[in-house]
Figure 1: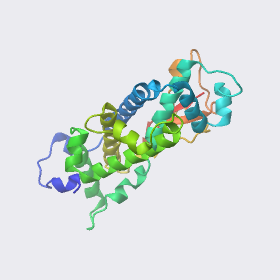
Figure 2: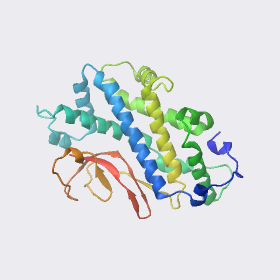
Figure 3: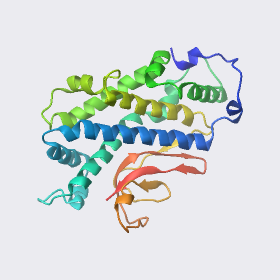
Figure 4: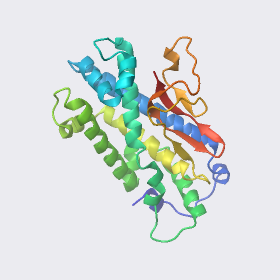
Length: 278
């Protein structure tokens, strides 16, 4: 019972229907994803990780398993050298953002395949339907959307499960906490937990972006930046730039440490990926 089944083809059109998907809408949708991911990652760090009795050790372990040895050497985490506490915690939040986006954007390109109807529909009709669904669900709260769109409910449950399993490997074991299932019930209770509501909001923002991206002709494509890539200012934005006084990037000289947010490209338009360059 997807959202499409709730809608009728004969609904009256609006000016926005006539215009269809636009680049400003795509930018707004990307900004919504960044805002939701940033907010959730910050809340997860401040409300959970920072309250652990061994926070610094857990954070260092997170960096150790998330970044290469070369990058860690640059960060001065290895060889007994100490990174400043603020920078250590800042990098942790960026790693959490990267983890969120890696999970949420996994399978992004397969979204349209999963939407296939048992009956043939012309591609242009599929795209119009996706844009209509995007507009119909963007004003809904995540809990409301779950009740009218079973596919979103399944998407949210799947992503939450993947995220909890990831945290179990990276954090819970290191912090000597109970198993991930028990932690998941505490952190991701959608009705009672602020973190749970934040995760649902973040997941919904990506769900909306998928519908919008596939409503374009041609489809907007995701830009993923592998760790170790050369920094390219045309396609990337350094999330750490504001913390680097007087530092200027030179394309082909700086190396990407990790990707916090994927970007998008549509025809000649580029929405930059958010990366960290150390």
